[in-house]
Figure 1 (tube, rainbow, N blue to C red):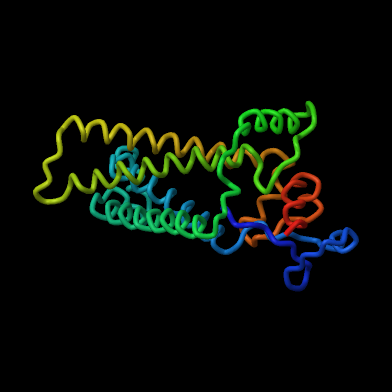
Figure 2 (cartoon, helix red, strand yellow):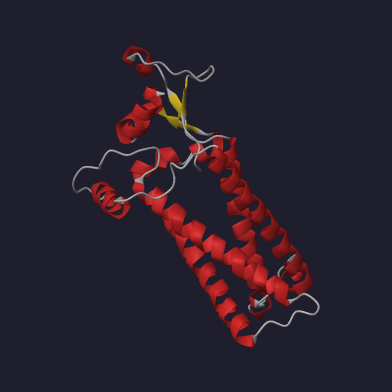
Length: 241
């Protein structure tokens, strides 16, 4: 999520040239490296599994007879859904620690929110709705940086409260009732906010202007002409390297 982009030719290795005529021949830019894509999909998969397995423990799947559908009887088995929930939590924990350590060591902070992101997000959304011009953007749009912070904060809260719930289940644990009640409410709140954040994140691709960014989370590349037009500040940073 925070790695620096490098221009690529297709086919061929990454190339950076200070000459404008050479830049015009570049067809794609490397937007996401392996590290970013690994973290993105590890978080996405683990978060989906956590939500579904958490719903299974309520137990909503039994209440609404989902467990009566073919091959879904296990969805109301608390021991099964708990094991799945814990496994997904371990994957999310690893992805979060990996993300923070790797990108901090690399000093890659392009996705971190900046001053003025709320105003810039308003101007970008306004432009996509047909009113006004978009401000020049860096590698990530302002609303992408805000979405990262919102989803990241809720994931952190989800993990923190989740581990307290694990501690509660350990033999000999005797946590205060008030603490456990508050922790459960925060865990549930983080889950709801996370779902809303993900829905908002995906809804952004309803705008045509955002769609060229979608393939890059699969193969890492983004169209160079699109990047020059919409992410010109990022392209300038690449040319200056």
